[in-house]
Length: 549
Image (cartoon, rainbow, N blue to C red; front, side):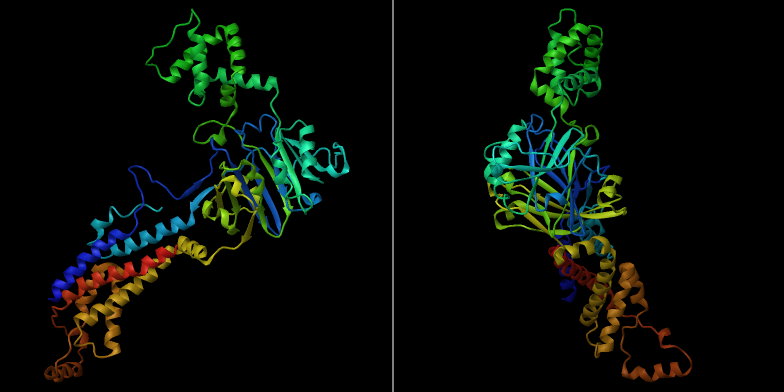
């Protein structure tokens, strides 16, 4: 009967292995679903990088060059909770790239793979583990016009004071204060900057408080610069045809109207067609110039030419300018209220903060906000320069907010430190191997105790006998094979009273009791029972840890 029970438990334990969550893998490559890879694409949003040390917040805010209002005289306004004389601005030519592994998800993966590895020490589950496992995987630039006279409004009540003015990398930035939101609105309008009327109420939230404003806008390209961009795009159409499909289509349409142009075969690939177009235009400069004039009038094509490339690594082909702001603050800060003017529109914000921090999220946006923690190994020099630390790895926090803009009624404040759950994830992320060793020893010891008590219950008469089977179970650290070898030499039979005198005689003659062994068929039951109990205990120990993460 007991043999049937063991076989039943053995079967159920094998089935339970399937409850460990799976991770993805593919032939020839490792799929990493848990990484943060910072790439700039078509999505309009806010991208922020923050470093906070000694009550000084230093941040980079990427200006999305795809935003139509920016390259047509639009403005970006950032309130800062600091005295304007203590605010330092700069314009970086490019936003540093930052990518890393999601610590919590990778900790789960490490924990899962560790549990499955320990199950594999029993040998027989290995065929079942094949489909359950997967490989684990700002230097400050020159400034112009400090303390400009900004008395451009009609009354002192609407006065705007500019404390710093900076023009760099095609971006103009100013640090200023305003007596009223209307005054700030008029000031920007008089500078020819496009500001919507509905921004006035949101800016009013900061007027009369200890806030300054950093105002930035992209200087629109001159007509000559725009024409140069178009000429370069046309000249290089054979190499950028896949990133400029509208331009390629325009060239094809234009050339189809030329009587002396021979169209390439319909089956030709884009590269060959682009080469044919390029050769024809180079030999017909007048027609090429006429084509360029037509392209200048097509806003969609011009936008396609001037926006970042649609390749996998767009920031490598076109830099993304960013405004750098440094200011003193007791808590990390990011404004959300200005975005509320977009009402029901979703304007996602991605805030990356070097170090482990915890956002103080208010109730209205709690369901629209996620906080994730990452570690990047060997960050590039731009990140090291920004943070002022040259480390082989850095931890950072990614806060994503994707809420309807009308819910952004409060600004976001962020505190240093993280919940105990996150610190536990970082521990598992780094020391999963140590956790594996400890749990292997614990599970092996307990399995030995339980199996010994069940199989050899008649001879387990005291605590010492009980603990000896736990010690025997530790040999499972060398897999079930190591345990089997140890069990062969482990004395498990009780000396019968009638044989005790004989045993004593052997010892008197100098023989060790270890040299005297008798066959014990119960060991054949002990080993499979131990293995089943070990797997069950592994599941019992690991599952709560996995759920904590």
